Image (cartoon, one colour):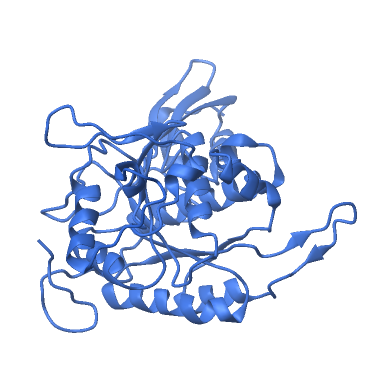
Length: 371
């Protein structure tokens, strides 16, 4: 049975994105479709992120639909255009498509390690990524990326971020005279420095800007929620109850200021014993799912306690970059892919959920604009 371009498009209109549940044609994901005289079909499928975890499934659905309509063969070219957040009128980062906060109400849960490795996983997939170390009092990015230096400015207005492994990096640690010096600032100084690291840095065009947030729900989190329209937050926890009690507060803050929770990562979930491969749940179990249930968000992954993560991080190279074929690196990649998928759903979905209102009104979801 011969197939025409019109029939091919009609067949593809019945192929839905597995997460968005909308036709690929409606989402604009089908490009440059051609049908050869021998009824071979060639087309481009534009994914919503280079880190899309559903590529194989989408490809299989596209091919099946076209062959059922009469195509003798199907050749798919892949491309990607990252779905972008809704920009505010005065958004300080208009070229950044997505701003993702990596948060936890608890210190010591491995939040910076998760942020660094998610950043590298997205970058290695082909995304344009930046990482901002928003933990002013305890910057970790210089150590974990093995980079020190003094950022410069080419125009006298914007600071050029440092780069390593293709990732743009900025941290207060790059600006300290002594890496062991303490930052002893009150709230207003902290507020000003943080805004400078956000809006006075030449981030350029990015698909994702990851912000490694400090523990707690204090000045930094409030400043960013007021000034930056974030795509959403990733909440990091460990399984034990003593961590959960603080992490709940971080989720609660997100709800109050209208930051969508994209998902939860349970870090240090278990340890695999050398030789026996027995799974030891050193810090208990089920904590990540409890936080996910409270946040009404998915559990993006459970990351094992792996000594190589610490070793490579202390050595200045995130494990995803240093040992990409390792089991722990693949676990980080899986979480990053699920995160990218959640971002696409957040930006291209039905639009239901929290609406961030920064008009200065009253109520639990309103905050005045910080200038």
